[in-house]
Length: 140
Image (cartoon, rainbow, N blue to C red; front, side, top):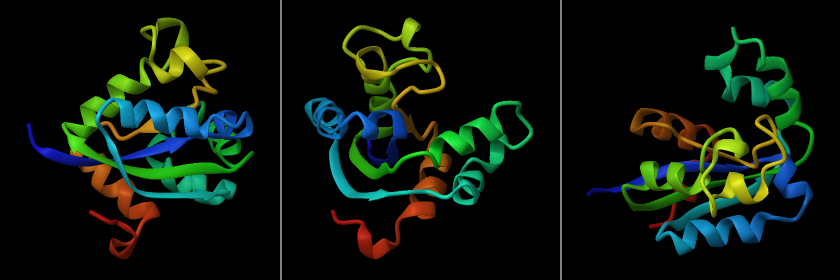
């Protein structure tokens, strides 16, 4: 399997509850390495630009408001099959359907406040990483 990079966001519900370290530990325990990380507070406009592909969906406004409600931690994870591994560690979007031991099962408050975001494809990962990080911020 190839070494990949993927974007991970620790969402407002998790940063507000001081879960950043516990969540990062789960990624690292799964063999992923953090190669870039920063804590930022998105504006609603920035969240809207990031989630633009969902702009026609009913949850878009609520999602943008939520993502701008508290700081988030954006990070780039690297490892073998990092995109699939990240999604496996995160668990199902709905924490009630997530496997035991996944981030969403352990920490999410609801389907909407599900603690983490992860890229769903190589194309999304490239776009999402570039949204938050310059090449100078990515260390190998």
